[in-house]
Amino acid sequence: MRPSRLVFSPLTRKGAWTGCLAVLASGAVAALAGCATVNPPRSVRQSDVDAWTDVPVIALDEQPIFRTMQLDRSFAGDGTEVRHYANSLVSTECNHTFIVRAGLVQRYEPVGQCYTDDTLRPARELPRASVLSAR
Image (cartoon, rainbow, N blue to C red):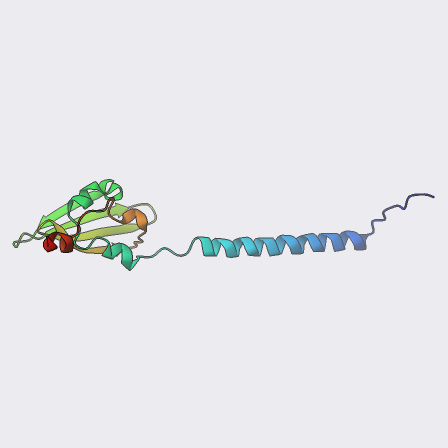
């Protein structure tokens, strides 16, 4: 008995390529969908902004990201300090503005094309004003 021969006709080749293309297309769609869920759009998270409220100003001096940025400081007559950290990259421009009173951050405002994440939070846990005033 002779072994059977595989016969390739244009029809079977086309069918094979169509199947391969369908698999590749579905894989590409799945990969793109996966990227969309892995890398959500960047935005300013309120929890990152709130993490700076009532934090001692030393945390700004110790924060690794802010140490790499240009700092402009100004002072009001009542002793309030305003710190502007400028982050000017090729594709984004964001200014991080902090209002500091009595050595504590009162408010943090990211201004411009900004996004926040865990890397912009205080570098270490420091006692907050509410803890210090309770003592």
